[in-house]
Length: 466
Image (tube, rainbow, N blue to C red):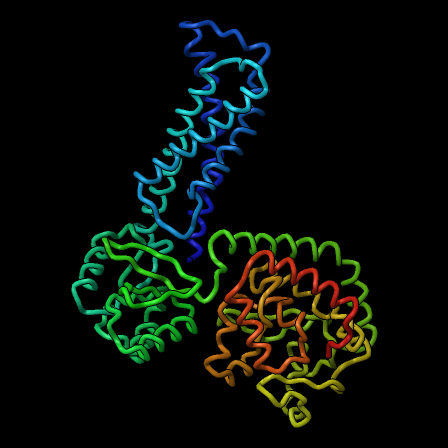
């Protein structure tokens, strides 16, 4: 799911909340100002607008809960206007029923039955209007400015592929832009189109191809962070991570490398932002002490910026400098080639040396207690990496990875992760890839929380970092 899709899907929640509040206030004013001449208002003194607003605030959360249960905030399916309105109607009715049952059980007469029934009707109307406003903004942004458009490659030459092509081409507000239509999934041709257009999605509309071609296509899409969808036939099976979409009357299945999507992705990013802010603020005294110790011992910068890769994108990873500074960026990577003959990791492209002569005294201490990694809170706050994920990878290491190893690039790299708490540098490279792949394919917030607690325990008890 692209950032634009996430933006508009998330925007529906505050819009619904604002419309529910507006509906509640509008109902009160309509009863007290517009309809008071027809039937006098008898509750203005014991239910003033301010007190009523607090009630509306609480009721709005009940309605939002009903909306969530009905699937109005689901990011996995697209719903039409008619289905969306029916869900709003049913969920709002359920919310009102909760309020009526509460009033009944409390055995108190509410001040005005109109406020209950009128608010229900106006809430349905206002929430529907709010969602249409978002839908209009999204369609306008896509049609006028190509905001959030998906560059799509369609594969297939039969009637199904042609029908999908016509459907997408005739609806520019869908967000899809077909940049290529080829009859067969030839990787060389797809790679050429991807290099020219930077593809977002590939749709295989005719699945009656040799299995090895389809497997190679799926691998290529995952390696290059391209969404893969296909029109299934009755003989094909699904993976545990998939989404179903419909264009025209044809179902398409998106195979996913990870369940980290939708609201899970939003919540994970919010956790990263809060962690980054609080980490930098709370640990600022520790930052000062470490910076002073580094400058006191050796000449050079306090921080070192290391080249790393996350989701196929390069970024500068910040760490406290724990080695002598020989390179312009404050690192000593230029000496690694000289020391590579002493590499203790013979099972893969990683470099490990337990008695690295480049380390300073302060460097050995902060590395032992993993304090050198604290500046990564800044990378987390910037969104270059996450609190939890696979280890950040070095560009020279990735160039030596095999195809099966590149699956660890499917999500953002993390300051800590399942592999780090499962043995870290004591694991073989293939074991590390296997553990990170398990995390990617089985991600959950519960697993993230478990990793956080185990990381804190490991920082206190484990001294094996090198």
